[in-house]
Image (tube, rainbow, N blue to C red; front, side):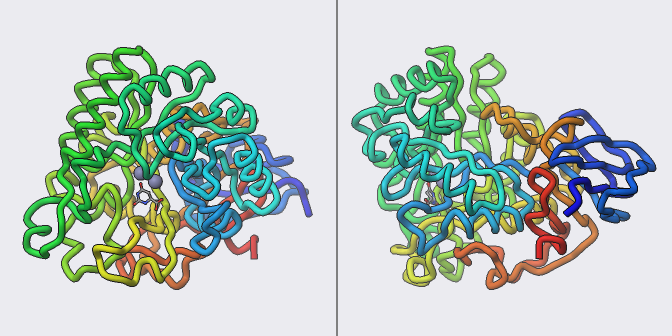
Length: 429
Ligand code: DOR
Ligand code: ZN
Ligand code: ZN
């Protein structure tokens, strides 16, 4: 195998340095060696990219790879293949595993397994509290040495404010951020969808927006009091965006992500009781979707994460009330966002790529998300003109649980390279 690749005649879009031009890109020994027009590299393998776009590989701050413990839903091998299929080259995986990633042994297991079986780079997120129980802080320092890039009790919100206060402080001592799943569990109760018109009509128990917003406000206040950073998971409400906007204007060190499904779908999708629309936080209403998009545009929301949450068919193909929450998101993330934001003229293509590459990389201080010369050749080839229809059966993820199945989308991931190696696309076959 040649150790240099010449991508020819691509539109190269790299928001980390403001580049948007048609050019060649040379990869040597897994690194970006040169970006220029008409590069001569006779020994390199040529990849004709005429009509295609090259962007930095996508960076996901929030996914669930389910290993160890829930390999029947997903494992590191299948999950990272799905990530590569979706154009992701670095993914941060949540600790709600069995055993929970609350100690260095589990972190090391994930890091080692990803090195052996992973198609893309995996950066684990450690638990805030032991066993995600909210009672006692986990061994954050030891997990940091083993490779975690943030801490979170995602899925099990930390209800005790003193615990969260201590966690933000303790994590900061190790140069880490808390990434918080904001949900007041008492307020959310046993709701299964957004509380509003549709929950009433469908006769399903509702989760009020305030269940998310009171906790988001708490994290902002703790961050402000401590003068330390906090990152907010999967923002879904208009009120949440406004809280972030105001906090940022005051200089609070808060950053936040939203997910493709909060950009593209509303709770009207729950009509028909398709359990694939069940996710936590739940799909909201049109005004929330509008506010989420405005938040991305004005910087109140920093980035887009997938919250890829694969589940087994048997956990989803049951009554709505008892179905597992979560969406298998890697393989539709880019196209859903491109279709909803860029194809409609609401957001520039460059802004979308920023929200999926350098913006998330900066939040967890990850060494990726750029096509700078000398950087790792983690890159994604896109065809923005392709129209395609989602077919969950064709997912590489074990989790086929998507509310986008059968939906037409525009813009497609054609190939993904990690350290100059093709991990998805024709050459990977
Ligand atoms: O919908 C969700 N699924 N929300 C969460 O917070 C957890 C996740 C999961 O692990 O399945
Ligand atoms: Zn969550
Ligand atoms: Zn999650």
